Length: 138
Length: 393
Image 1 (cartoon, one colour):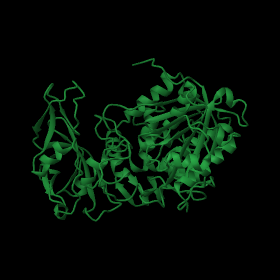
Image 2 (spheres, one colour; image 1 turned 30 degrees about the horizontal axis):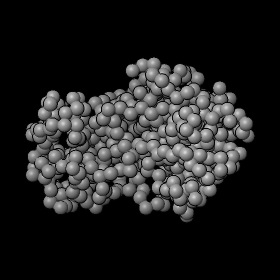
Image 3 (cartoon, chains in turn cyan, blue; image 1 turned 30 degrees about the vertical axis):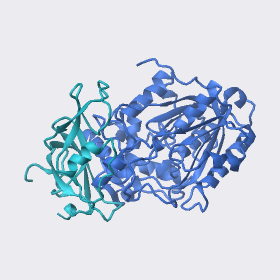
Image 4 (cartoon, chains in turn purple, cyan; image 1 turned 120 degrees about the vertical axis):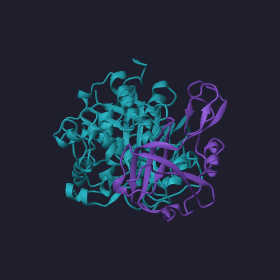
């Protein structure tokens, strides 16, 4: 799909968020996992809100999840993207939620709850980012 | 966490209110717009610039305090504050002003917002990507976590919550449309409004183009606007000596929850409910000792129509999923059980980032609103995360 063309802007990476984007750039989906209590978290942050630990591990995620919500974006249109963009909130099977977008599905076939999985596309400056597509043929 | 303390009831009052015209192109800077609205509010209050010792605005407001002081001619500022959370923090200016006055930190506080949301460099609704992860402390992380995916505007961020809301409760676009028709009916008789003399039908709502399918048509969106609003707040004792009947700040509060964001509020477990607004409603009513039955008029932040319905539910004016029926029954009309956004709201009047809803509440309680609620004595204002109850009692 043309949505895979490397025109979309690369993420703005900060010291706090680099753990997610640096892995994504290599085609890996990760989340922070607290080394103190084991709780996964996203978006990344320096302290575990459950146990106050500053020790953190990087957990590899399966990329499998279910569509929690979506939105079909028609306007305004930015030249870096193919429209309509299907914005997506995905609840991953590990129990965290990601915002992304859906590809490879007609907009009228999008359903809340549908199983989806991550795939990676390049951005304008090269780094990959995770998008999602339906897990089953429709 | 019940029975917690709230702002001293009625300790502070709004004694002055002012604004510029609301337009597509102000043709002057935000600084000048702020000067004009503040001067109008002080004139309205019967006070002078030299009486002011406190100023409060939004973190995202472009006006520099130092420039404002040297323009308006404030002599000595003893308290200044800025409220985060963008428009969600809009009623927070009242909370901070009232707290400053009630604590003796300041005596006369001016709260203001000046904005060129239409003709300025950046429109909220434009398709922008950001080189910076910061957001002006607007309470959103969208610059980092939404923009790489093409989710570039407040409408697109909020739409994800709105679609889940529709899914959970069987809400349809026409349900949002019925609210918009009411807002535009109010705006049609408000000379200050974008929608003056231009009401719409439900069919026109449904036929307007999609901004975000299946929840936000063009006519579900607020009107990006240039203008400024200012309010003057002082202690209720001093207020009694000023020209207008004081509009007492019965209570004002903020309720922000774990993982809650503004607009890009995507990480709370259940996005079909604005549970931050549920907490706000508890603060305004149960904690502060007001009854929902006491409310004569409601002003509810309507950047997009779905959040009007979700706040009506969160505040407890109807059950979850029942706002569509509440609205279809005519509750928001002047003769309804909860006249709401009687200026036309941000959708019908214009978008001064929420502060024009406070202005309308003051007008209603003074009895000077264009669409006046008979004998209005108590108003609630909700910007989802911040809110207040204003009262004559």
